[in-house]
Image 1 (tube, rainbow over the protein chains, first blue to last red):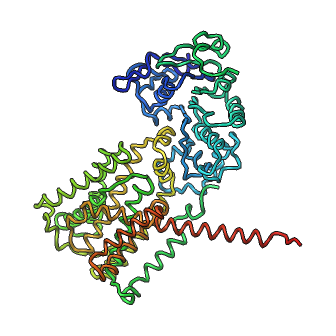
Image 2 (cartoon, chains in turn purple, cyan; image 1 turned 90 degrees about the vertical axis):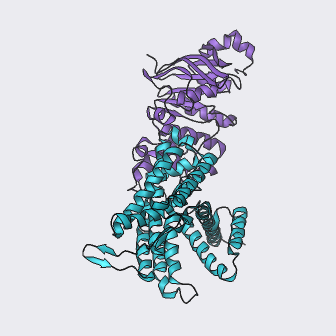
Length: 247
Length: 339
């Protein structure tokens, strides 16, 4: 059984149909890429998967349990974490604090007003471990707003990883990154591959085709093609659509 | 590193310093041309401003009708005294509960909103509470308000303290203020406080981390409203009356102005600084001209234009610059000399 099963998901905003009959299955440990032109409905699909948008109809199952229509916090608690294309970090927090608030141990103390966060070395150590895993071990005490663009992209992923997710959803993780940054990110995601189930929306074809196990192409709100990177490179629709260079 | 050491403390050196200075106020307040009652007002409004800043500065919720909760607490204090029990603690508990209940009603209806919609709804609810206080004459006394509210003795078991004169009342509210400051300091530096701060920075991200943002917003509105009601109860006792004025839109605006001028968005103590400056400006400039609010308004405009983080923010910036300069001179003096 697939870990994520999307069945007949349909999203409309007023009269406008944005997603139509989306069907998708992602197996545990798979890296599933989502690609498509601008305005195709990729981000709406992502928002539907992670609870920001409620589908008009259809089912989304996580390990067999229907999560369609649940709020983002409920879906996050079931083990689905996401990063954002437009970086959404806590700029007044340090890198360590950004990661710390994402830890399940911190969430479990959410309504605790008796203890101060400062001085809690167990939380700090756990956060530092996550930061080190994305190469930000030396940046723990730096304010998020003072980090470089590439470091902020890495912190986005660290925050998602800190949630100890089963499913990691990455929304255009290479957006705005240069060649070096993209290479480092590809190395990081390659390390995570197999340990987590990853769904990644991405424009960078070289990046996606080098990492993904399977890719779904969304256009006009529908899945128009699906397959392994090799299969898709031969797909006549993908070839015609000029979605980017496969390198 | 997990934040500064003062964040982990229940009582900080700044708190001790502030309490010490405030404890000496009755000794010199007359000598500088002011009067003891202004000290009572400053401390009570400081409690109110700190409570208000939980929603504005900590959680980023623009509440422009907070006077409603302060006023509900003031009326609840008087009504509890007249109808239930003339006991200080019972009346203060009544003020807290009434404020928190009003906060719960408002919060249930607006906690899912954000930004301008949240702000407009708070104004609307503030006006509703103000209208009720003016029109429900049989309960609130209408525009005449509730009069003859007593300054009840503070009893601790068999010991009872008369707080009917301004000086003893001042020390009573100062003791209450000290407790409130400790509790709020711990709250804003606890996991709960950090999550409120995360909500201020990004509701979307916080929700996607698994936090029920609506519940956190509702809870902080209730806590803030309860504490504002508590301050309102103290104010009714200090004034020996409760009037609808404290609930009107202008009064709700004042607490926003005090908090922003002081620097509530960047500092725990900002609201207290704002209250001190506002109330002293009211009396000092007010003694010279009736148009004192014009000058305070001008100061507010200038601050928003040139120092939007308020006085505490400006002080913080100066302190950081001074530290950086000191660090630079230390590095220069320890560098090996050449030539």
